[in-house]
Image (cartoon, rainbow, N blue to C red; front, side, top):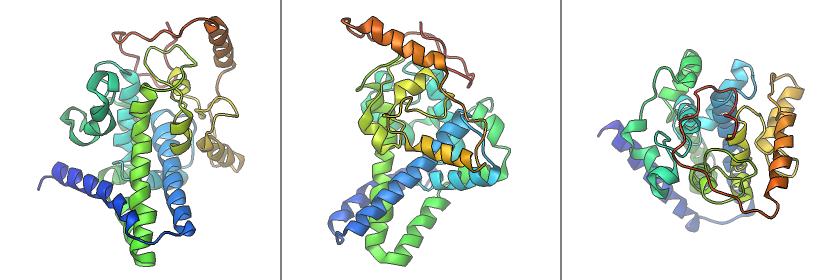
Length: 302
């Protein structure tokens, strides 16, 4: 059986395994285990894969980077280089041809799951991709990317060995599925439903529901306006626990060069809000040219 077919089989098996939650005991400590497994691994994904590898929103020591990358890899969403490299391409061609997962280009199912499993065009990344170029030279990260099945398999085995089937289901099966769809929803829900604070050249939207389950990633329109910021929730009321973890790391010297939201972005948000009063929000065109491959900042809105 080819590796790709095995990956698809394992993916759908784990998806189906979440239904075992109806056949094992219910207890509030098990619900707490689901929450810990879902949200801790979600922070690993967004802190390491997204804000560090893809956008260089902050720097951290190699040891801390490896730990967070391993936690993110245990979410069973392939390896850190693959994940972050495709995310860079998403920004490069957001909601236009070349975007690996746009519901406007390829439809909702394909943007949500199909591209992740079946799209041969997005199986590999070009050597010029900045994530591959800059991070594949670290052997510990390259190891996680190549053997991405080891962290989730290790987690599943440890849970089963410790607490049997209930721990496996509540600590691995169910949270792996909820986290997968929380992550995939940023590609689909956040390009279809929500508010648009900034007039970006794509259909990115802010959505508080996805922000909750994806630990701050749901403030997607904010992020598309300014990719480099270490926080996606630009205001205190926008739930972004990943940002507070980064702040805590910075306080103890485990993060530095933390990129803020520029003051001009807040001024722009106020100006857009004032201009829209009494006016409908127009959609964006789908035929704009590709964004530059630079990671420093989104293009200025037209």
